[in-house]
Length: 637
Image: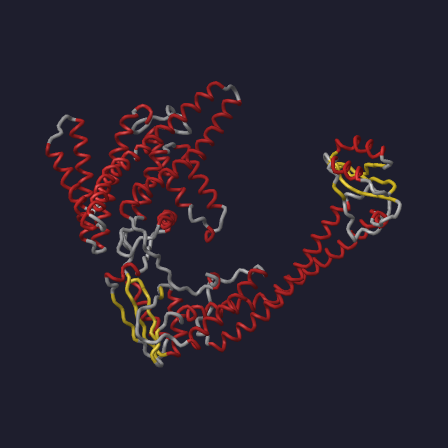
């Protein structure tokens, strides 16, 4: 296993008979070490009626299988029982059968959807009926239009009732409140029908909203309620029947769906490779990438399971192929969560320095420095262990090792600082207390930051040399010239502090700075004035960036001091409180520090790693090695 760069890869090319391609595809997927790729070639691709048609059938069958497993809530097996080839005729049968099963599921799903709509509509009618429940009259009467009588139902704000009642009384209308809901009143008004604009004006001024009686309400409200409730019970019974039919459907087809999923899993490798294969007559060529250490595994598997001869050719990737070569990052289990944080920023290129180890160790170290406390670290460890214990081994959270390691780092530095649950005088510190030596903490943070940046500049040079970018490695701001400039600036600052600054310091700074300027000038494009300005700003940016990046590491000391300051503030507040209040402040204060400050420190360390670290050397333009697999659980991917 390589510590600081990806596993060595080999380009593998397999030449075989056309009939052997499906089984070979499955064997490559079963090995779990083959990442397919296409290559530029003048040979004709696999004919459309063979490879492309196979892929279309597979996609159609997979779509139905995907919908069926989702609808029936099925979890497929992790592996297949036996590796066999699936030909086009078998795939067509699978597609047809899955289409039939999905038609049954789709019909069931549609019936459930229609029932849900009816129940939703019925629930809406119940809510509307609630507005009329206090009217002791057949609602069908209220929907009639009388020649001499004007009857209206509506809603107005409760505060307007008395004024509107009085005003309508003058016009010969009667108003009655039959229901109150919150600040609104449900009213009925009645009077002799006549054309009177004053009535409409009065209703508008009282914010009158007319209530419309649904067509379903054609009897007394109590009778309507009974009728609606009977319909609701009928619909609920239909829902229960559908639920039972769903269970029967699931029980009847589960085994078959699992079997069809296994067959689709066996068809998937050939469906994927069919778009990347090259064909010449009855010969098929498959190309891909494989770890150097796994070549013999592939050769032995093919020789054992394929009767016809297969020509296997392997070679190292050429420099032109480095950008297209996948990165195989084989790392221990505990480092996987840190590797995920690295890949969130980007994937290291094939010949690029893999920062996962460096990132993991430096992250753990800086978190402990900034959040050193025995009690808080022990809480982080305890919670991670408790969470792990509550889950099965195969379901263990992948970030368990992340919290375990930063918790252990916090405990370690807690012993160095002598801090436990914010108390700094219960146990003697093995090293120092940050609040008692603030200047030393700041100096150490600057030394750490400078060392960090120097190391990353060396890694940047390494990456450019591995990519055969020799000029960039020597003359670029992130190359040897940039490194020498940074060291010269640090040396000059030390000499200035000791009154030893001399012309040698000036030359040590100006020489790499001029080299960077000239290199940018030569590399640039445009007019002479444009190139001059770009080169000048580039040289200026190198100095400012080095200065600001170094100062950014002061936050390592700042958060260590901040942790101690919060502890002092917490203990001061606790001293003011008495009895149970004292311990309440201690407990909740430590919880506040653990959750809020712990999260802030974790983010700040990540910021240092990303912006002061990765930005110096990490191009992050690679892509991860993704071998084919034979797993029904990963069929959808």
